[in-house]
Length: 207
Length: 218
Image (cartoon, rainbow over all chains, first blue to last red):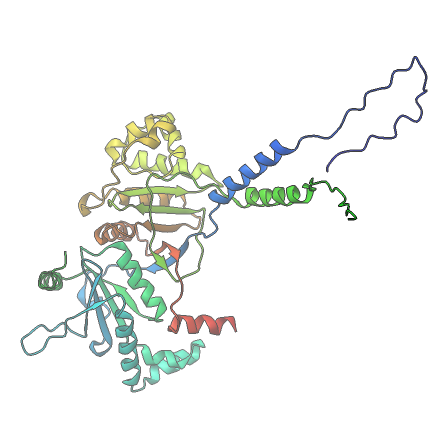
């Protein structure tokens, strides 16, 4: 153990009747309290240390443009609008919203299925690519892959409703990263769309 | 019968290496631990697949909890003078009539979430007491009276010439309008880039993002 040997220090002492033998004191220290304290501190620091530091998700918002003629228009064929509702419900439609008796493209989905919807839409946009020489020339000039032009028309519009949670919003933004959607925007929901979500929720009994 | 003599051995084991290792681990944890300042409310952040880490200084953190209360925190560990500058700017821009003593208290409160009318009383308290006060959150819901706009503008002036990042830390269960109002306040200050604080999540297998990550590592 951690102790210093002090033996053998008595060689020079004279032995005789008048010389008292010095008592040999042990220099051994009881280490138990120190070890106890050490382990107490270890447990404390183990519990308080957070190994996983939080990460950050970048979000860039566009500047609010008041004039309608300055606004960027998305091609109808490449647009996918995702609406977030109450109770982790996701709704979506492609292109323009149509809710007539003849045609209804407003669909209900969930966070599990929306990934396939995005992948599927992206695939179809790439298939329908007819070639854009301007974009390809620009991409070559900037040293970007030409294949990026194929999905230039694909744009996802995210519209969280008043009842959607922050988690839903982050989840759908994360879905954009997961599926490598290059162009997406977060836009305020229209009253008409919110009304439609409300009606669908009532019909599906979602509170 | 010949008896076998078993030599008596001491049951004492040498604990020195054991203790050495224990203290080594202890010193590692002491070095690795960084104490977080106590936050006014517990916030569970949603997850995302991104692995970018957060800036810890030169940033402003806007947090909101599950009850949709908004808090404002200035992160500037290295230069606490900036934190003082924020409250001084706010004091002059909104004529809050705060005393220098009250303004110096601002540094000790990590995350403030009171309307301007309640600012004087919370800054007048000792730091220990101020931590226990129930803060109602900065009013943001009404876009005509979004007080967060002034907070951000004060921070922008204080950080002038330095890189400033905006962190948005929201509780997973908070509703979207709060987040929308926070973004609205930032937009009105001509700020369009934000970092959302998230916890790390696994990348889904077979997704395009996973493929792009694999390509990068090759």
